[in-house]
Length: 107
Image (tube, rainbow, N blue to C red; front, side, top):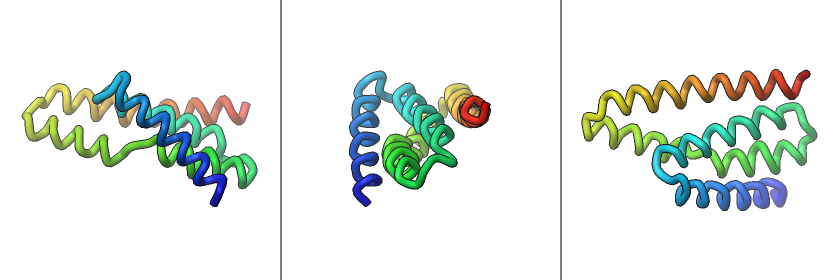
């Protein structure tokens, strides 16, 4: 529990910083991609490392609720191009970063 708590504290701190700079869509995008890299890098690591970094840090850093709110706002504001671009970029970059991270870690 201590490992998850400490990792979560640090991940939450980084998430808070990204909410301020770059903030907005860029902050959410950066937080989620960074969490994907961390999680991909620690899969298969020891239990304590995985709990601290994968569950705690990456879990607190990633922000799917904020992503959902931002997408909902873009939908409500009828910003179709930005909505489509941001959704596509988030999904595509997430898959690519996850794949590259696992490939680099296994190499």
